[in-house]
Length: 80
Image (cartoon, rainbow, N blue to C red; front, side):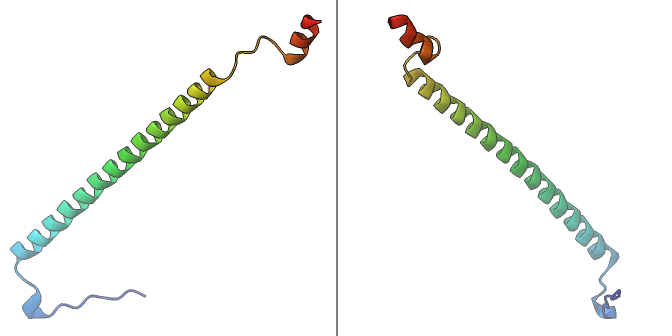
């Protein structure tokens, strides 16, 4: 069911006021859109930083492990 908004005759305002209101609405909508773009960009930057951190942690853990030359069963068989 649609409801109609009723505005009293003395509160209609002039055409200039209506246009200013529309202009302000468009401006606020534009600001909202820009904020959404920044929010998305910030999220992408944070995700990239998290991926780099994970890769760096993985690389540092790899460098701390002792180097192995081949599977363990071959290394024990060669020593005998």
